[in-house]
Image (cartoon, rainbow, N blue to C red; front, side, top):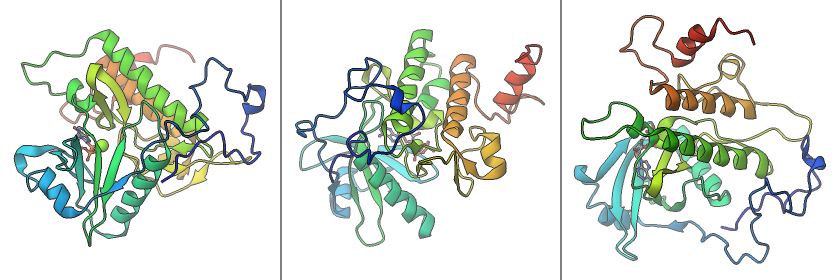
Length: 288
Ligand SMILES: Nc1ncnc2c1ncn2[C@@H]1O[C@H](COP(=O)(O)OP(=O)(O)O)[C@@H](O)[C@H]1O
Ligand SMILES: [Mg+2]
């Protein structure tokens, strides 16, 4: 699939504030645009057979299991054809919603490319099987490094926490300000921030992503989806999704990073289950 260069396909649409900025890429605050000659064009997502992915993960052996989420199980594998180490996500939710999330993820990750977004290597849609093949992220997810640490694991130091927050923010900025139309991620949470060598963060899981509002619109209306504890209250109440819904979720991840607490923790005492409520209580003496 072709690379989606958000800037090249502007079709004359202007978003608020955009007309004030230089369009020739000279703005030092901007990420370098994708070269027009396609020299670094991303390799299109490959298709795999189920047999290839079963071989890669030793038949989805439990020892290869990396984690389990709402979408399915994730296994570590090695592609026989190239020797590349990958993460294979096997969709276990049947029906329309699961298939829809699969399609959205394949489309979004085929079109969007940024150093702070996870790379989709390919997918498998053999019969009823739906699998996604990603680059393997050796340090797992941010959640794995923040909460319920085994005794032999060091907590993240402050600089690393800030580096992860800055990288996640850059990924989000790309989705919101560089992609055209903008993309609302809708599932920003610590388990979806995956960590590469050196704790370089990448956003993953685009199955819930939505194209954002265009023109004069400020929101898109949708069914409320996302993860409890990270979801912006005004979106949860009205179903009106805006780019700011992601910014709220980013704020929750940031609070997790600086407090070390979970977004939702039912093992804590009364008034402390919800991180945002707990922080608000402590800040209530401040006037905003
Ligand atoms: N590309 C990857 N590389 C390494 N580990 C991964 C990768 N993708 C997912 N994982 C691991 O598998 C777990 C489950 O992933 P996922 O199905 O996205 O569910 P969730 O985001 O709800 O945890 C993640 O939390 C992470 O630890
Ligand atoms: Mg995930």
